[in-house]
Image (spheres, rainbow, N blue to C red):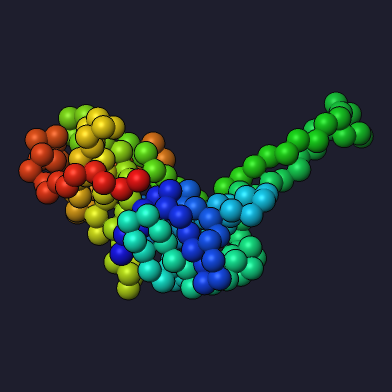
Amino acid sequence: MAIPIKARVQCADGPCGEVTHVIVHPATKKVTRLVVKETKSPHVERLVPLRFVEDTTANEIHLRCSRQELSRMKSFVRTELVKSWSYDGRMPTETKKVKHLNIAEDELVMKAGTQVRATDGKVGRIDELMVDPDGGSLTYLVLREGPVWAPKVVTIPIAEVKQMDEKAVYLRTNRAGIETLPTAPGSRR
């Protein structure tokens, strides 16, 4: 199953948003949730468990829930009001809104455009993820490389991924090794 990042999302009762991020557990290389930004104002980003994904196409993800059910799912960003206190601790001097991601410490947020680096430098950016529909395990990273007017799509087996963090995905191979992987013309979007 392909998880195209920035894909339109359809709920059972109609269009409901766009995928903005994918939540991954880097140690197990499993996708746990998608982040769907609702089309309805105020455009809240919701955490959608992978089990709600019914089907995917090159540009669309179909969920097995209604728009109302989506609106009740956890928010991706949690806002907390934090008060600053006076020197003597008696009076609040300022209240600030602090935003936190509503994910576990051992989870990683991946987005379209996350850099992919071979052992000898940058090779492209993530465009979508291929996931085993039964267990949620990542199987391939799909990245785009080359110029915007003539991009090429490269599919990288997850076994080639050495490490993932919030800045990049690091591969076990060099750029020459990437050149030997299958490519396709970049046609999505």
